[in-house]
Amino acid sequence: MTESPVVAADPIERSRALPLFLGIGGAVLGLLPWAIAGTLPLQNLWASPTMPEDMPFVLLPLSQYQATLLFSLVLLGGVFAGIAVHVVARRRDVAVWPAALGVAVVHLVAIMQSFGVLAGGLGLGRGGDSRAMLYFAGILGGVIVAALLAQLGVWMTSRRSIGVAALGVALAAVPFGSWVGRWFLAFTGEVFPLVFLPELLRWIPAIVVGAALVWCGVRPAPRIVVWVVALLSLWLVPALFTAIQYGLGMRVLDGDVAEMARVSVQLFPMVLAEVWLPVVVALVIAVVGTVVRMVVERDRPREVTGERVL
Image 1 (tube, rainbow, N blue to C red):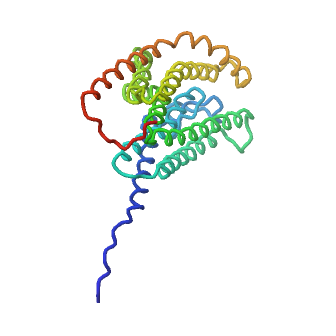
Image 2 (cartoon, helix red, strand yellow):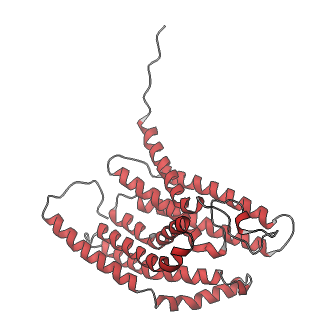
Image 3 (cartoon, rainbow, N blue to C red):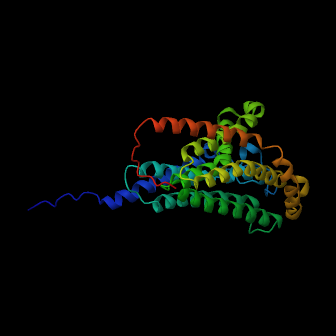
């Protein structure tokens, strides 16, 4: 009786399994700073009185007061996965779609678990305050948008085109600051962050954008577009985050969506006038870093990396 030969794993299957695990890992990493603590924030419309320490565990911070953090945790899962695929793809051919699938699966599980808990706590389907359904639908809609943008993040940051990948990193710089801030809160509590964290987080996105633009470079010339878009995003996104969070967080408006939007629109230009300095810092980092990089590369042979020029 002859033994059946051992068949090696199909290289195509291996090339799909690796990005799938990278996608799952990236999405989990994005949610991790919240999930390690994970209790649902107090809810204004919770069906029964509950102390903060008695709130149930959820994978997502479902609350209008945590809107920008919620968006950041979901979005960055896709960005982290895309960066991992980009690094691996420099040495071997890998498909991007399994990574996107891995991110989507983690996000779907997190959404189902978290919103299942929220629906039960709000008493949906059992009558009660009609505002609860509007609140639930609004938060769910925002999370779905963030999950779709996370898929875009996978695609952009996984590209062999350095210009596209660098732009994806730069666009995620402001959410990355929120993500880092959540780690500080998870490990140090409220005392340290309340004193130092806002000022620290103000400069993290500038450093990320500056580093991304150094990586991008200025050749070929179309990469200047990446510089312009990245620096504009560093100016506009913090103001947008602040304005939206301020509008959503005003309890005195009592769920008046139109009034929340009006307040946010009014605040947006005022915040824009205050958040320009990090853009200057990012530009200085990018210019100095790019000049240094060009000088260094001029003095050594060009290496073949397999990455596209744009």
